[in-house]
Image 1 (cartoon, rainbow over the protein chains, first blue to last red):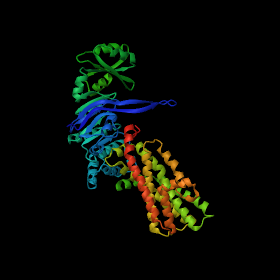
Image 2: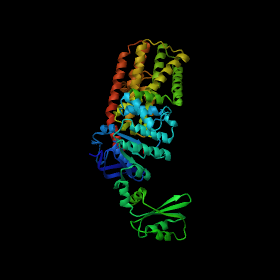
Image 3: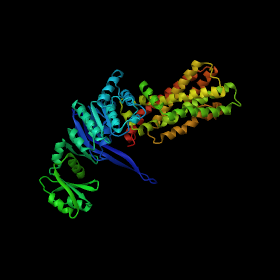
Image 4: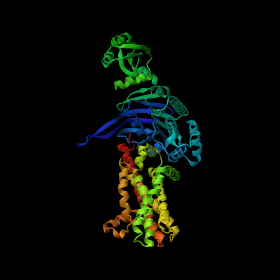
Length: 322
Length: 250
């Protein structure tokens, strides 16, 4: 039996527009998705903003009622057995909110220990263990309002683990954390997974997903557009190499022309200070370098390089297709 | 619940600004009221007024904040965590509103002490034990009324306004300062179903040496009804918030 089983899960939001003449309409944030996560697996849910990742997680942790379909966590239905699901899952989200600023880190953990039913005898030991694990030992008596973002995020992780959840939901946990903090966070998450905790992670950082996740589902427009291991996604979507061209003053018409070239799967532009980085993904076996450079015409071109496709390339390709 | 209450109280006691307001506001209320009444009221009536204005502080400390408390939790991003916890949601909210009413207890003490120091209103209550029990019953009752308010207002984005709108009418309707006999007849049934009415009756009775225990019992019984209504409503309202996605602002 899978730890998380999702079948045809749907969520619609009612919304309104207009000031004088208000009209109601529905937004379908999640459109009948299916996936499953096995015990001990670290599963990534990737997608652009508004793709439905957080909505999916909130349905799985019982904060939102699904509009359709079904979801079971550890065999418990998220609607019918909400309390049992809550008892056995942990939820950590990124950002500054979700903590009591005027209380110390220790008091925050004490409070949530009570709410999550950690027996009083175990609380002191468990909190000390977690403070040690997230590197907040010695700072636990300071008020949270004085914590840095990284410290807050680590406190969030500790809070989410207080009741030793069987399944941990991490919703963009590394958002806004510095690179060192993010690396430590990845180490912590990998350690939890190695210890047998099932983890469902959403993130915008592809290298993070690539490094951590056993399997990934890419969600776009409320639908799952691909699932598999990071290697499978890379192979299935981006068979060819990726050409990167540093340019100065490239126009959108040039990019459109590159996109139309035979053998080009997709082309995007990233702004790098004064320069632009044009990323061209080639179809499997296609050689597009000279044709692409020809399209630049009189535009000044800097460094040109070719590399193997990354998970980010696969992700961009999938989202473009969706 | 005890740990939740203690930590919520700790959190609410830590704002120096709120703390100063909690002391100064009741002093202003009390001063205004004592100046109005001392010309005409008898010493016994002044004690009754002192007790009523003390209860005003407890109510004021709770009403506005209780209505907006879950909105506040929502803004801080903690409401979802409270709902996602396996603890029965009413048991999460009750310690929060009780901690607010307990903060109101500061106001009660400040009012009585200020009345003694500045206006010479005696603190030698006829039945101290009944007075303490009445004060605690009033705090618990106002805390549970706050619990009902917080649950009813959970989906309102301007919940604090509901609390503000209720603050002053309750001063009048519950007879904190004006005897209920002066109010129109149709208002009295509303007063009788509000637990603070019986709390203030009990405080006055205990202070003046009249029997107070029946009023204390009525105050607590009505408070229990409010607590029960809030508990029954909590499940439905939280489910509705889960259905309408109003637990988080984001």
